[in-house]
Length: 86
Image (cartoon, rainbow, N blue to C red; front, top):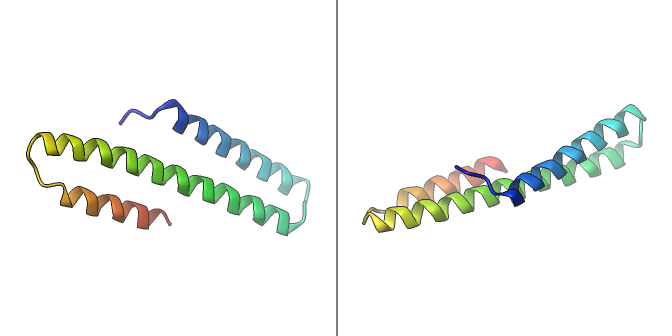
């Protein structure tokens, strides 16, 4: 799958968040602040995973519809991927 620039930029921002978290830990910042930032990073990863799954699902469904195939299994697989990412 080809990932678009928006998804790549999201991942770069998440990478920056992780680096910031490491710096906070090195500086022995308050645990509440660290955990808050961890939650933000996890949420960003979850949203990015959902975006990737939805983009891939849309592409696959369109392709299978063109070929006259059943898309039900693709949808189930996408839902399972989203559930697994949580």
